Amino acid sequence: MKLKYNKVIVGLVALLLSALVIPISLMAQDARTGIKGGLNVSNLYIDDVSDENLRPGFHIGVFTQLPVGEFFAIQPEVMYSTKGASATYDSELFNLEGDYSFNLNYVDVPILASFRLGESADIQIGPYVSYLTNANISTDGAVDDSANLDRDNFNTIDYGLSAGFQMNFSAVSVGARYNYGLNQIADSEAAEAILGDARNSLAQIYAAFNFRY
Image (tube, rainbow, N blue to C red; front, side):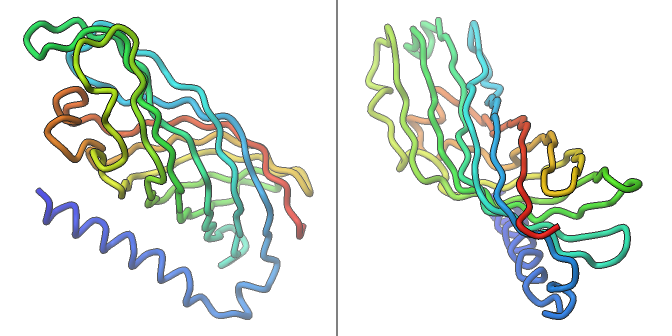
């Protein structure tokens, strides 16, 4: 399984590098660069919990849209993004009880294929790679020491797929996107005991401000 994940990571890295070898003249032609940010709503889909709630948060970062044709562009981004969820456990089998909040913060690097629909709409889809900057678990009523789990108990690399829809209005764009993680976030026996094979799931709405338009 680890070998399979490593192949996926290598493939995504190769795609990231491919974006860097686009001819400079092509990148400069009608390229749009700017900042973007907005609302995150994340979840982890943890098994065997009595209640699970979404975690609200935010994302912010920079993007560049590089046209490859009249109706197609490549859009790399670097975003700081909050993820996670909250869950209520009531399990005598695993000695887990109480409310847990999983707070995970990442730097996301999506590389998106952007397909233009008409004059002002884009459909975007592509892979992302993420680096976990910090992680913590807060608890209320927990009966074990799970709150001591930190970043070392989680995979520092995440990867997955992103897809979304964007409307462009001259210097401003607005859109929505969904990100589905493919890598298990727990990386220790203690983390797996409470998270199982949970993966990141994230919905976003955002506004982007283009410096060149």
